[in-house]
Length: 50
Image: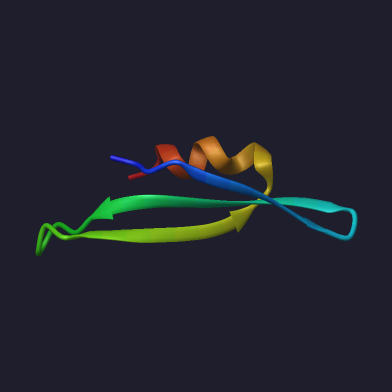
């Protein structure tokens, strides 16, 4: 299960994207949020990973 919240960030000439996904902990069953700033072409791969 992934929460797709994507924001575009610009730093100089580089275009970056901040992606946030929700990950369920196998031990407690609680959900945590994992944030990452990356190139826009890598967002779908990041959200597809478990």
